[in-house]
Image 1 (spheres, rainbow, N blue to C red):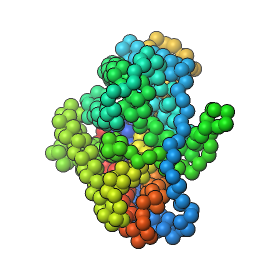
Image 2 (image 1 turned 180 degrees about the vertical axis):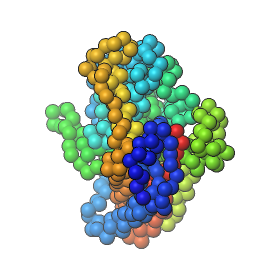
Image 3 (image 1 turned 90 degrees about the vertical axis):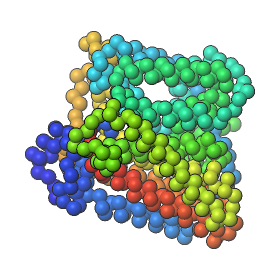
Image 4 (image 1 turned 135 degrees about the vertical axis):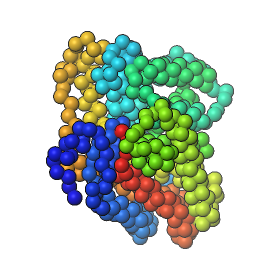
Length: 461
């Protein structure tokens, strides 16, 4: 059943989430605000999981030479541009100043929307297409030029794990991550932390292993259809490749890298879970009377940690079962097949944030024209009319839903192909090849169900 226009407009304006109008109609969400998305989900969920299962059968049926794994080769990446890095650092300085001196309204001040929409969502999307852009413009490159030290300690990805966990807590649990001044504080603390880390371990090591965002963007860039290879001139040349092919170019991740990948997937999943009616009911709160983040800080902190542990346990059990069935090394499976999780993490990241990005990016473009609320119009966009009306029209909502659902399903199909190519490296025979992938297939189907359910379940504001 489709709601009439008046009811849809009233619901959108009030920001209320409606419960099931009919058995085939439920709601989906993404982003910080509650939008009404009328979505028929049962057939999509069933179809999505069937596509993932059938893709596994297809890759087994196709000739093995189509999936020849080859030897893992470390892929080249574009190097940091000193000018771009300093320019990026200058932009951050202006945004931080705006956070302190500009409007306290997070939709008028450019810092919150620039960070949470343009950078965390938009730049991530670009990495999945154009490769590792962050390696060129990373502002830490400018700070790193102030330090020069060879690392005595080699902690691997563990500092990145810790840094990303703090970032996820700040985004998902902290009561006011959108407050301009508090966000400016957080950025300065992060820059100081990074500067100390680079002074201790050296900038090259820190940026490759320890900075959570450099690591995150590099892993997302492995999905890009644009790759980089050394040319005879000594420079890098751009090369087209299959999406996700970059995942097969690197060696297996160390245990700390495995934890990092699972943490990324678990944290974005908890973002969807923590505002669902199911979660609020579980923790004893009325979903229609949302108590606010402050009241839920303790339980959401615990929930985030438990979600990470559950995802780690699920991956660990699946990998060990696959290794046992394939009769191969458990360590190899644990550290290699986590690469197939990266497409899944990005697919849900894209789907989860897409609707909010479409609205908040408009606020960001408008706010950047007048960063200090002084009446400026630097970019000519200060009078931009921000529209969210497309989130109240059935046709546009349906199109967004297709993009969200398609992203999750395509990401899982990509994960199946990547897992199959990895299995070809280690499986001794066809029986071991098939048996070793069955546990991971079950895990992927399970997360397809979870991801689509998270998109369609009612949420609080």
